[in-house]
Image (tube, rainbow, N blue to C red):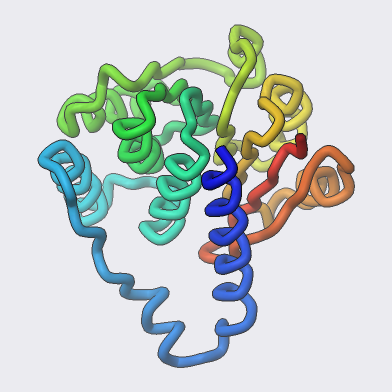
Length: 222
């Protein structure tokens, strides 16, 4: 556990340094726009990465995270040794597949909420094609209501849905997140009330990774 916490700390520091200190360098900008693709260690990992690449090439990621943010989600989840991941906003399953890359190694599961039946159906197909459907439960409908079925402890929460609802999701899910767990939120620049809440809550330590619309990374203190 200590190693996982140390690694998470290193990742957060590097994220901030990369996002802020080197944002104006041409070399860094080029790297961020064209990151080298991850190398697969196993056949299972290669299968998931293949579906992620197909989705990106075919434009089936919809409003999902970018590849760099996806890799950050996978890295943080695996470093935390997460057994329970909750995602608000499945879309077509792109970010969920990044979580599954970590969960294949941690032995965990993903519960993901999606309000649109069409996108939920596409996500299920992508999970099936990637061979990770057994790791994922897709819940259709209004997540503001459906998350009431969740139980603690949750290791990682990822919020990427209606921006006006971020604060409600935070208030409902934070009590279920274990001490030492993570609350992640995409496009936080569009959710100022959420940013204010996680930045001032003494239970949380929060930093921001500024790829895309900004990824908020909050640690629930022990």
